[in-house]
Length: 174
Image (cartoon, rainbow, N blue to C red; front, side, top):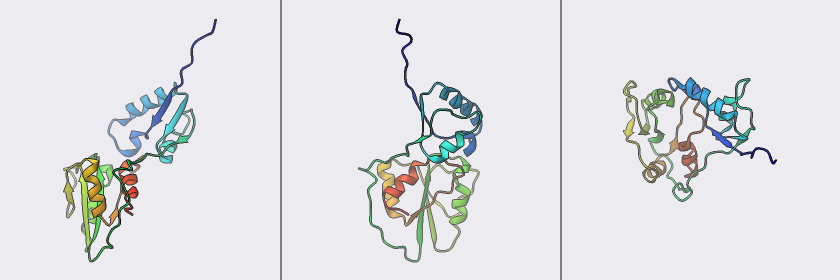
């Protein structure tokens, strides 16, 4: 007899949801760890994600980090003008989770000579002050906002590996 056929399983983990403020994330986190026990290899999207899963009850299969990539046909390097009397910051998040830094962007928007554009969902519980809020946009539109900004700001708490940061960097946005 040949015995049972072994199946390899690679499990990609993004990060513990409880670490970045999702309500009721513990049930989902427990499921991720439980499913991981059957994995042959675990892949993380950032070093932060790997570290968030370490511990006695954490994952047991590897420490391979493969960072998020960007679509190089959309997010290309762009030249920009140096800021004049106003510096234009861009921030974005698909999620309206308050841990994504909304309050910090609102505070930043109150500084003289600063403009903040936020693309995504803004929670109704946080006053936007001088932030220009733009509805969530597809990548083809988002890249235009990256090219129009002077700098990208990301003030989220414990965000595991935000694609928007790598997209902004790919366009040359500091």
